[in-house]
Length: 380
Image (tube, rainbow, N blue to C red; front, side, top):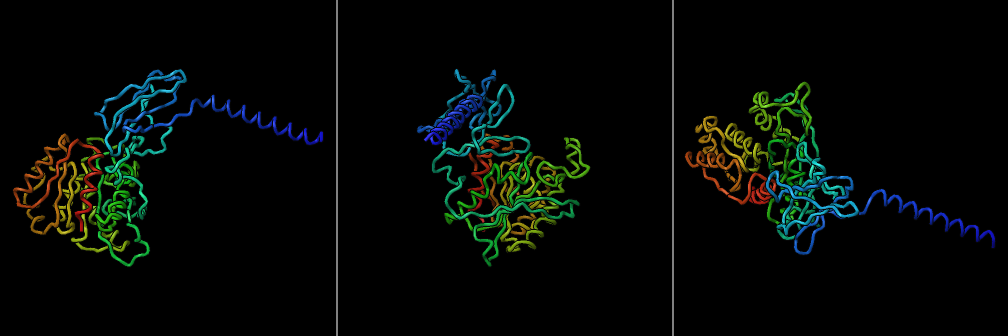
C-alpha cells in the first residue's frame, strides 16, 4: 500500500511540475493569438504579439501602395487592428514592427515576391473559389532544369501538367506563361496561383487540360534570385545587354525542350503564350520576332513603350501568319495603360483582330490572376 502511495505521489508531483513548467513557457511566449481573424461581416482583425515594439503598422494589397494603418496595443502586449469589410478575393499583406517589414507570425500562408515575403489572405466567397485549393483533381508542378545553349546556361523552369497526365496517352496543348519584372519562375505559382486556377477551371469544364510552362524571364539568371556565374548585381546601365535574349531562348531552347520531353501537340495551333508587365513585353516581342510559333497571344498590363522599336512590318507578318486569339488586358488605373493603348493602336493599324478587356484597378496580381482565369478558357 505504501508503495502504491509513493507511485501516486510521484505521478501527482510529476504532472504538477509539468503543468507549472508549461505555464511558465506559455507566459514567456506570450498570449496565443489568431491572425488574421475573418469576421462574419467580412471585416478582418489582425493581431501580433510584440510587447517591446513601439509601433506596429499594416499594409495590405487592398490599400494604396505605401499606405499603412496603425495597430493598437493592449495590456498584454498584443497589437490589433480591424479593417474592412473586404471584398471576396485573394490578398497579401505585411506587418511593420518598428518599421521592419515582417510576415504575420501566426499565419502559415505566405509567399515570396522577388526579394519580398508577404502573408496571404483569401476572403471566403464564390469570387475567391478559383484561387483556392478545392476538392478537385489536382495537377502536378515540377521544377525542371534544362540546358539553354542560347544563353549558355543550365536553367530552371516550373512545369504544370494537368490531372491525369501521368497515366494518359493523350497529347496536350501548351501555354507558356511569363512573369513580370522583379519576379522569376516561381511567381505564377506562388503569387499567381496558376496551378490552382487551372485545376479549378479544368475540373469545371471551363478550360481544356493543358501543360503550363513558367520559366525565368531574366536572361542573366539560372533560377530564382540566382544570377549566372560571373554576373554581378544588375543595374539600369547593365541590363540593356540582355535585351531580346530571353525571347530567343524561349523559342530556341524552351519550346524544343518541352516538345521533346513532354507529350504535347507540337504545332502553332496548340501553343499559347501570355505574360504580365515585363512578361507581356516579352510576349509582344517573341510573337513578332517568331510569328509562326504561337497561335494564341495574351498581353497583360503591358504593350509598346517605344513604338519606334516595334516595326509595323513585323506586326503585318504576325497577322499574315494567322493568330487564333490576340487578347489584351489592362486596368483603368494601371500606370502602363498608355503602352497598352499604343499596342492596340498598332494592332488596329495593321488590321490584326484582337479583344481588349479593361478591368478596375491597376498593376496588381489581383488583376493578373483574373486575367489568367479569363484567358485560359479561350485557348485551344
